[in-house]
Length: 126
Image (cartoon, rainbow, N blue to C red):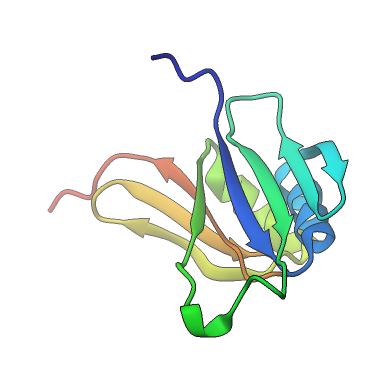
């Protein structure tokens, strides 16, 4: 089996708001739109995102939700962090370095979708 592409489907209350966030701040573009959904892609190796509108007749809050974090591995994260701050993106975890060699920042889109940007760097040695 060969996987030739991949996508993450996110069910949100306002697909257009998430689309604006991802196209404005993270360089995605709309590749397909329809009633209740927007498909986003990039020209690089990033996973495609499918934003599905939550159907209030099928979604019940008492069923609980699984937290989803969309993670993108990037380069030049420190500069990207400054750019995102300057654009007013909602940053929920500021830029930080983890001892195992991860530089990361986490954003949240208008629908509460967590998006983590990670750059792999040298681990901290003591």
